[in-house]
Length: 137
Image (cartoon, rainbow, N blue to C red; front, side, top):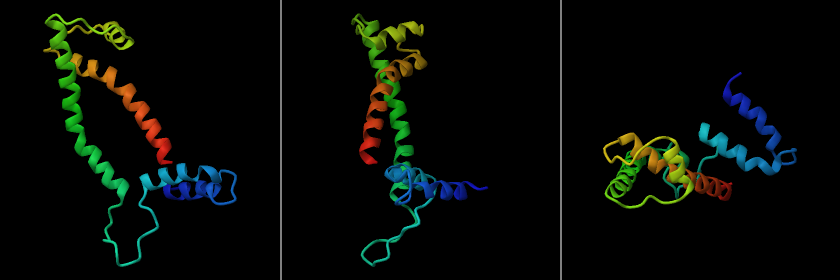
């Protein structure tokens, strides 16, 4: 059984009048991420293209990855540089976790710089993605 037929079978439970009707937006989001939507614009006022908005946004995210990688490194580097020159590290759970992992504040350690930034960035990103995803649905 193919993924497409499995999704079509599951989709029947989300149709109008079905038991999971109120969760249709979640099903539809998953379905359109995996496959191109079946609905298409039919009028002449729109540009017709095979690229839909979700696939365009995936391209944007992929194009953004090198900038995010550089930001992870540079933020950790600037933090380690300041602390190695005498600035006091923050007194919070992120710094406690960083110390627990055994990294020092060496600006030359690329992995340590990336981990230092990730400890601050990932919780913020997770909350943002969760809230944005719920608003989107």
